[in-house]
Image 1: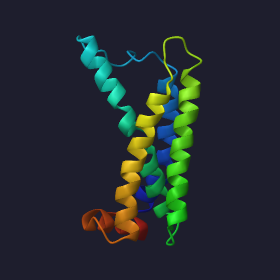
Image 2: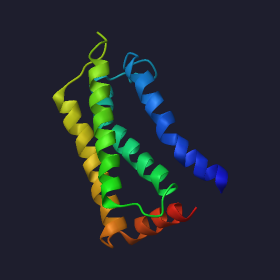
Image 3: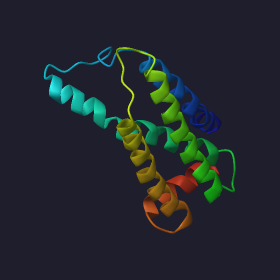
Image 4: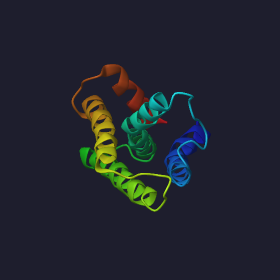
Length: 141
């Protein structure tokens, strides 16, 4: 279990590095679908989950570090993920083959807010019982 705990703690950092590296590369570096319209739609929709994943990883990492995961820590995780999303958009703006836009930030923030809603409900409001059990299990590791 100790290894699992350390994996959860290191995942946010590894994910942030991966996002930073991929933001430096052309969008078709890894995958390009034959239909450019579908390719663009799928890649644009990934903004909805990209920084939501970072937020969830941050929450999981902090749950392994403290028994007193508070609403303030939860908000801090969401804000950190949002600010990392902003820095990623700025980073992308320096590459001619990438784009940065406010609409991308709106999608990034929307994904974070949706996950924030579920995690807050599960941890602090007694909603989403299965998610709450899983998060409390992570906290006990």
